[in-house]
View 1: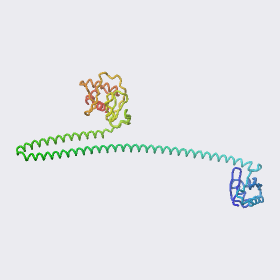
View 2 (view 1 turned 180 degrees about the horizontal axis):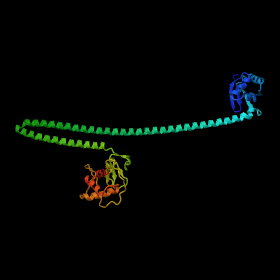
View 3 (view 1 turned 30 degrees about the vertical axis):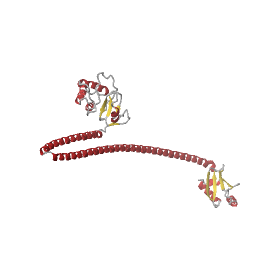
Amino acid sequence: MSQIQINFYEDAITVPTPENFAKFKEVVAVKFYLDPVDVNELIINFSHGSNKMSVQNEVEYVKALAQYLLNRYDKKVVLKFELEVSEKSRLFQNELMNSRVNFLNKKEQEDKELAEKQEKLRQEILEKERLLKEILLKEREKEEMMKLEKEKSEKERLERERIQLELAEKVKLAEKARLEKEKEKKDIEELKSSVTSSVIEAINKNIEALREQMVNKAISETSKAIEKSIVQKGCEKKNETVHRGYSCNLCGVYPIIGNRYRCTTCYDYDLCDVCETKAGDSHAHPLIKFRSSAIVPVIRPVRNMPENCNPFKKFHGNNKFWQFNNNNNNQIYENVCKELKVSFDLSKFRDMDIIAALAKFNGDVDKALESLFN
């Protein structure tokens, strides 16, 4: 016999078996927080299997333990003591009601603490979800940046390979020219040995002049090709302007990087460099080229265009983007001034200032607008 079970209404405890009835009451007083006087007034019932009896003194307590010893080999039988409060006891009249109130207050406090813990846990979960979203957003932005850098490096690699191929082709051509010159020199030396000294001298002069002319021509053509390539590369690298707030109406790229082309007739119609090269000639209306994003015009749809105002024509042969077909430039500049005032917010500029800017840049609308706004 090592332990017994004591039940006090809903509360139940399992303790080592007390030696006597006095210690049993001490255990009850300590475990259930009762006054010893109130313990003496309790109704104590003993149950062991189907055997039940009341225990109110030392003799009855010893009998109860003896009943357990008789069936100690039956593991299904448990020694239990049931505690009840007498209706005439002080505990029933005073302390029981107070203890129930305390129990309810304690339960309410525990429920409140549990609700606070649940709310705190919910807030922690929301905070972790927010941090997780921020981390995922940063990772996504990082992946996009890496993708853009990878595409840029790939373009640079292809450009380097193209330049290397061009250089290799030029070296090959130079080597071919050198071999031809050596063959020509060899033929000339053979010719020299077969003619007189006077003829050789005349031939040498003609050959030297011809060689100098060929060299100068080759140098001139090579220099022009190199300058053109350098200018094109410089323009491509230099013009990386970001036109924020504008997207291409064909490919949908946003924002437009590089040159931006604005239609003078269609409302809010812009093209990027690539789409202008592919489909610019097929567009029905003139386009204005913006090299920088410093100019932010107020665009409105073109209304009541003058019948004789058709000044724009795209020209790819030189640095001027706009060229005029009419020899009467003053009349054209006046028409262009009217068109620009319809398409852009130029209310703070006089007509003569706009016409003067167009005349200064020989009809280049892009440069004229940039000079006005700067």
